[in-house]
Image (tube, rainbow, N blue to C red):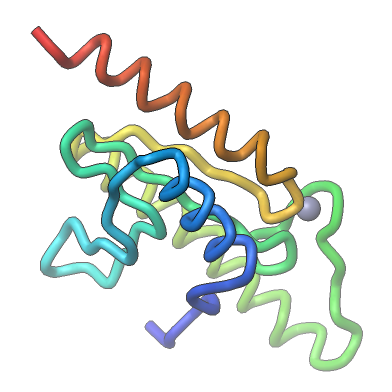
Length: 129
Ligand SMILES: [Zn+2]
């Protein structure tokens, strides 16, 4: 598979910085499966929480997805593949016991941080004996 979505996008970097300020520690661009090119944007490996920051364009956000007019069929194939890949990786992760949290790049940063904090709290509550 071709290299796909851009790494270290602005919303992704901003989220990581904000999580860091919250005192959270995580791995970035974590690859949970050796055989796959799947990378988790922000991974909390102890509780297996996988956070993805999805670009509105690349991942087809229902609010902002635009469709390029030039090379329309190339783009349509490319974006469809992205979505298929999201679905397939999601399945792999869930099979591996991961919880997935997807955040759209258009979500305000404080709300995104809040989602991560809440997800972590929930996972810690259920997973700690
Ligand atoms: Zn959007």
